[in-house]
Amino acid sequence: MKRIVFLIVILVIVIGITGCWNRQELNEIAITVAMGLDKRGNQYQVSVQIVNPSEVSAKKGSASKGTPVATYSETGKTVSEALRKMVNKAPRVLYFSHLRLLVIGEGLAKEGIGEVLDYLSREYSFRTDFYLVISKGVPAERILEVYTLPQEVIPANKIFRSLQNSSKLWGAATEITLDGVISDATKDGKQPVLSGISITGAKESESIETKSNVEHVKPIGSLTFSGMAAFKKDKMLGWLNQQESRAYYYIEDKVDNTVETVSCPDGGNITIEILRSRSDIKGILTGGKPEIDVQLQVEGNLDEVQCDLNLTTEENLQRLEKITESHIQANLEKTINSVKRQYKSDIFGFGEAIHRTLPRYWVDLKNNWNDHFVELPVHVSVDVKIRRIGTLTDSFVRRLKE
Image (cartoon, rainbow, N blue to C red; front, side, top):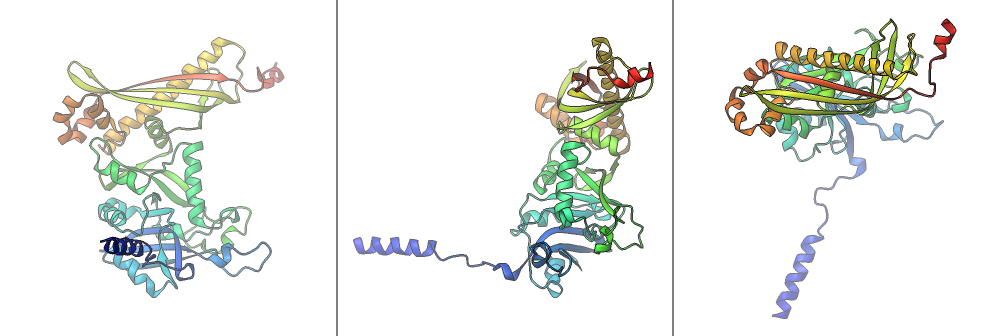
């Protein structure tokens, strides 16, 4: 009996240490950092950006062996087929565990990305922590071909970090992963929004995929985040402009840091650095009917003053707070009404707020929520507090004009 138990234990141990049956050596794989998806007729065009290890790891001062990345494209009836056909071009097996970015062409996004998302979430070789963006005005393939500045020799890393910085320091681009898009597309009372990316400065005929693109003080072509794409389920409806994108970010309670420039009472402008922002969305009942109440609390410091205003008085600071409140509130209300009128898609999550706070009423609304969303009364209130006015108690520019 003891011998049988001993053999069973040995067998379990042996099974547990059999090693990685599907391992791949580093010199056999091509690390893929970005992927682009476009639609060509009834076929998918898949583009990948892979790292050139010898160039990226080259020591400073050593001779250049080529570009830091290479791109390959292939078409297929499905994304999976196109990727498998790419072995005819790529020198190594594509490895997707380090994927940082998925760029989806605008045309494909308008047709619907549900099937693409299903494949990416189903395929075990893909992680789900990469960002998704929509290419604006150009194919996704073209985005991956842009040669970027030496600070970020890998274009995918440049886009990845620029997206993070734009989200945290400006508030007009959204960081959303595969799981986030799927969650918003399948959630009751909330629709997806993805950042848009475009190429600025370059004419269609100009070369932006070689080092010549950055061999100027001002690059020929640059990658720029440009608005946000509004969706209904898995289909893109249209674009939010920069101001609408920032309003969306305020409502979604995602603003970490940004600036607001407002007009002074007697002319000129003043810029306030927003340091903290908190949005609270609630479903409320008025006359037995659901409505939405959006309350935004904002704190900031005076950042730049270009007007003749005495900043040492409490009265003037309060005037600036009220002006800033009106400025932000008007932008939020204008954006909400624009989305209702143009897209009839609840990208703000108002339905989710009603579901959360008024669950009994949500049962009757959810089946035709987009129709209800268009007619939904939304009340916006903004409270702004200016905490500091900087290192100067008053602007010396005022005294120069005296």
